[in-house]
Length: 478
Image 1: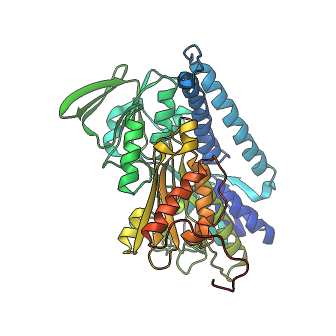
Image 2 (image 1 turned 60 degrees about the vertical axis):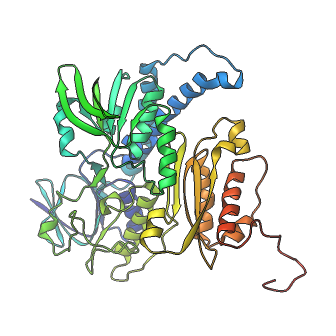
Image 3 (image 1 turned 180 degrees about the horizontal axis):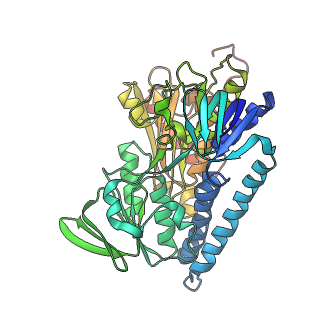
């Protein structure tokens, strides 16, 4: 077995690992990036980008099918499933190609393919023929779909999101299990592309939402478009010769439905279970993830760092990249360790209507005993939303009593991906609700709906509605 000694090993060449490598390589040339699979991040290969390509095709079909509401009439859209999937694969491969090209331009001596396994705190075996001793190690191994045991009853007809993006053609029907981000996005997109879809959820949860009022609005919106059971009572799952069968209870009546495939969209799990962490001195949590500091990525008081989906916290690309930077910086400057400020929490689901969450969630505020009030806007009567016929959903914004500080928001509704950024910036800037209302709102735009919700919140906080403009001739505090 060959042996190498390096300053830093980065395990995983995904979004977090790539960012960690760049930061480490700024400081030392003695760095090794280890990857057991193909180069190309989860986002580019099977996540963010191919899912948005499928959603874009679904939106085109949906707009064409509903143009008659504007008095514009087209022939019913004809879905060419093969053409849809050709574009999805081609553009996906283009995005992946950029990532692969980036990594392969890094020095060959800095890269190795193989599965990394801890032999001790400092020693890793890479495949069967390399042993590496590292002064510092960064775990950036990502995550994979979590398939709950009951779904395995579907056998070879059970698929995950990775499989969808390799299709040459669209199937006739799919049963989707899980009403999280992946289930909502892919389930609705397939429905709009002519696939018969049933989405089976649990516990009346929709995506990451926690506010009961927003969850109710989301259930209403999705149930009105396709077959969506937010709390499915599935009594049987079976693999048949030409598909899958599902027995479930709907409104007290037992039903049986057949589908070509069953899609497991029941969350993701961190890739830490096959790293040999039991051979280290690291303290592990209940899921086998090293206990670590979120603000410096360090595992306990060790020389080992963890970043990205592997840490089982926020499976989002921007979070993975930020954590990779933190882990790479601290590994490169070890034993000097810095704690870094996190960006405002922000999450978006690219369903239609879109879902967004910013700052503290409703559940966090309630569980934390925070003294807060909520203001809301029903999008059904918002001017610009009605103009565009996207007037569905509910926005809820939260503020702290006594201080008036903006605490967070949850929403299902139009243009949520953009509104989320405005609210996240406000949250990170520590603005009060009154200060947010001083900002300009153009007319007519959907952002005016945010202003209405904030005004309602300001009244609930007993601080009035829209504040007066600041007086230029008054003294400080006036």
